[in-house]
Length: 302
Image (cartoon, rainbow, N blue to C red; front, top):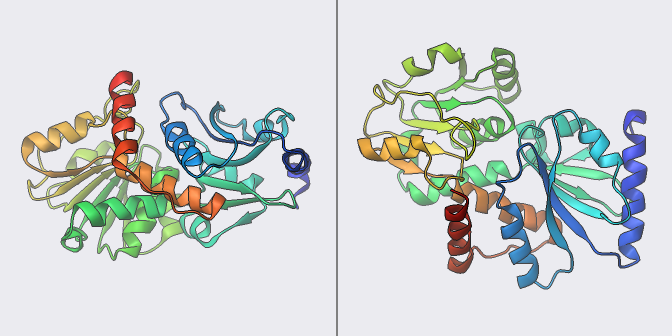
């Protein structure tokens, strides 16, 4: 165990002991922002459905403050597992004791589980979450693996690029706002990947077969993605992993042009299903009732 993380380990081990004393179990998601997250709606619904005691909460944690968050848990919290969202998917790595194969492959973590001995294990379910909607909504997905342009270079982009590599993408271009992060992503995933400057973002689409937005731009409360689709072939697919709003400006513009589109709700649900399975060894169902519930919540937020 790393000495720098010893205190966090002790606190989480203490929380596990409290859980065995039948204190209320707490699960949750940490991020910044986190106000718009639908994860509590999803996981609390599944926990009630499967009669799992406890509650799932949102925790707003500022960038660089994960260690403080982990080590400040009190007996009232008893956190047993967490989802990790922006901007912590890479930063969380140094606080974990073990990584499963998905987290090692992607190089980022969106799901954490507390083991009985107090150690923390990290998973990446975004990889599964990204792939499933693509396969289900685009049956002929293989023909869209010729040239893929990915906007963003954070933790979600790592999962997307790992997924594209798994699917056999022939050419992947990463266009992020920070060249250092984009290059680090390329070096980690390896394969047929090129990196482009953010200033060149509008010049990459003339022969692209798939466009994927992994940036938070376009999210509710954030400024829209500043990207022209003028050069994008109308036969191409546009995939925006943002789910709030249901249809981002990018998706609306792509639909107006006649492009096939994939929104972020599918990825949200499939990564959540995989997280739930990691925690409880149960594959929950994504029912029509749950999907309608999510859409109602999103419409209220917009």
